[in-house]
Length: 621
Image 1: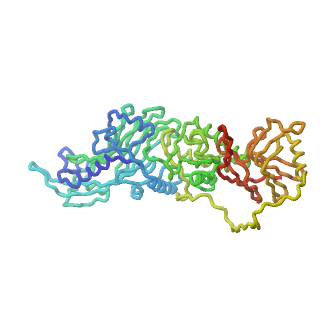
Image 2: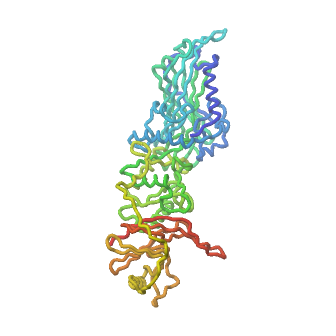
Image 3: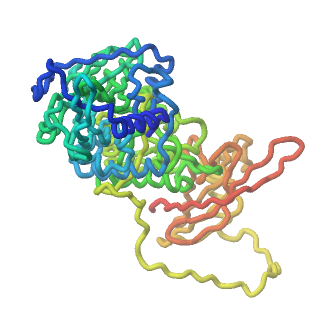
């Protein structure tokens, strides 16, 4: 949320004027032309045109103005003087607000929709409601106090009769629909908790409530205000609620017909009109939205709450891991991964244009194939990615390299459900393309913070290792040539069209089903020449497995037959992984060294930088 310094000064000035100066009152005795107790009118139509603001186009293009509205105590000032210096909510404030909103949404039928708010909601909101603050795109709150001073006036001057204080609560809600009149926001205004704080105020004094609205660019349609309340002090105590409708006629800037406005409220007495500051809102007519017309409080950074449940569990786990343990995600990276979108981070996401979605998915799917094999979709799995393909921070649109996103094959139904929920969030909170920043947050079904994937359960057994009696190198007394399985491997290399024909740093162990597993680092693939020599065009990879079942050998590598790759592919160019150590369990578990070779003359020095670990499940028989 953003705040203007000028607003704080203005609010303080207005409050002091009301409380401390006896010559200023909200509701002095009305002149004879006024009718105390007159009916509330719904025909008041107030419009406002603001002079051209050189920064208005920047605000409309996504650089939002202050979270806490314009300096409404100076309604004749506009532009930079009115907006003041911008300030952003802290990470802690964002977390508190998003936690609050997530729990409110969890109480409704649709956890992605606007919160089911009432004026009472504003009382418990963890935001600065005295200045006014948006909870999400569709909900804005303000709680302040106004003081009415009753006076008895004649030709000799005015005498003070008494003071009455009201609490003023404003709950403003954005609207959307397929009717142009639904480009609007509706404010519920409540004046309650009346308190006589001095003397005996006159209960027949009138307080007249109206709204005010100014458009911030001359090219946008003039904002209109419908609704007002014209009541005595006594009537306000028994009928405390009024409704003000701020309407933006169709039209505006750009393909989405965007228009931005500042709204506020006026309390009119006999001689004095007091302004209660509101905030900014944006209206649009985006044709790609479910509802073509709508208005939102766009200055708040939104949050997409993805519920971790049986519908979306695997997608939720990927997102949580990407945000909290990014270096444990694929694609692997030697440099620290920085994946955006967490409310605990510094970078938000934005919705991208439709034409960018397919390139994002293509890059993500290529990484799923690279790290999980060409058949990663078996078992009705899909390649899930975070940030989502529909964002400007997705795999391709988010930049070159692999440090800004995560992929994993997950349950296809979970992937589709999470995508549907994100689409509903875009619609319900009216997230425009290339406009509205938002976070992604994984929550429990009750709206509380999700703590991440469950750790494996069971009893852990301490592992002990046999200590070698000494570190002396063994003495070689006899060398046997052509020892098994040399003959089998040589025959396989001679006849295979595309399998293993040679490799180094060999390890081997027996699988639980009786098969033998051989692990290699640098590996040449077939075929060999007819004379048994290796062609210079032989394909070369940095790691492979050979599985022996009886006298049958099968080569396992990454990529495909036509484009083979290492089992553990490098994170960046000019890098590779070699096998380091292995663990003979029901799966092959290795720790590998990430190495590179300098290509700068005059040296070709080898440099191994870091360790990585990987686990494989060998193919079934």
